[in-house]
Length: 432
Image 1 (tube, helix red, strand yellow):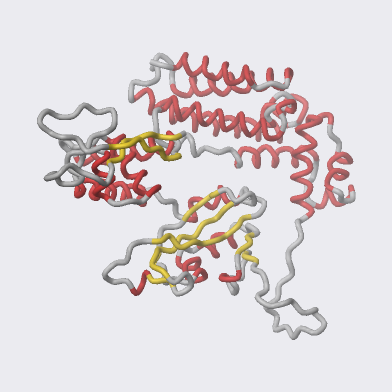
Image 2 (spheres, rainbow, N blue to C red):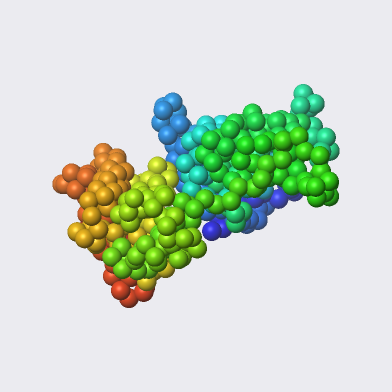
């Protein structure tokens, strides 16, 4: 979405100090004060990002029992994000928010400190990164103004001042994790080691591709050759050249079986179907799994491990977090085919004939999912957002059952439109 705000022009009336008397475009001028001309401006910014920062500011103020502020949490969040997104001088930005330049600078610095405090350590983000087939490791220099102690922030590579940020992305280039900033003079490989990225990726066994600046990283990080590669028969090796690992047979079986089970169901799929889809001999199946039931149980737990719970831990009201979480689950089902439904629901429907291993795995996953949703509902009940007439865990089970039932209906009709409507109805029933 695009958020609109008033931005003061550079021209001011004679005798007035810039940035002191500007008002938003839709504001009413104060008596006796000549307003500075302003124009509308828009920045591409999601409401989720704005609300997340506003919630952090609001919690910070409540914790410190802050008294009256010039701008509310929402306006301070918009000011800070506009500064981070578009840059510009504090004086001009402050005029658009009818505040002083010093106040604007203080608000921006306060917001930056709050955002930096919630930066994830790579070890915390690693379970999410581990779900990727491959990861991309890269870095960038974020330009900054020159500072007094400018030597550490001067990048010899880019010939300018800035701070270094390391990022991990998926194969499509979507951001998964970003590091805290280091002085711009830090080398890419040094910055990667300081943040513990190489050790984390190697211990998680995530195949990672990086640029030439990280040659020598070793572990699971792969980098290109700086020079034209010579053939191995003419290349003198000292044992430092490692062969690219091939996907294991076990991983091939798991990935192929997940697709086969989703399309054919547990009872409709045979070991021959699974090994045929994986392109491996049937005899190799029993080198890794004692039975089809054992493979299915592992897939159920792997599917649960891939469930995104970040929405449940995010900002905003409890009902908003619950809705975002289930919409993410609906998107996951849509990505793998609405006509095949939710994989967990598919196994749950065949528990009676799938065996004890699958039955136990499905129950464990449902219990863990119910607990995660119940924690959010319990917080909503404490805040007065969600009805307290039923225990939180009972309401959590109701929500999950409603979602899975709607997903089954969507599987029948091949359309998820009713699923979203049923989800909104279920969430409305929880409202206090």
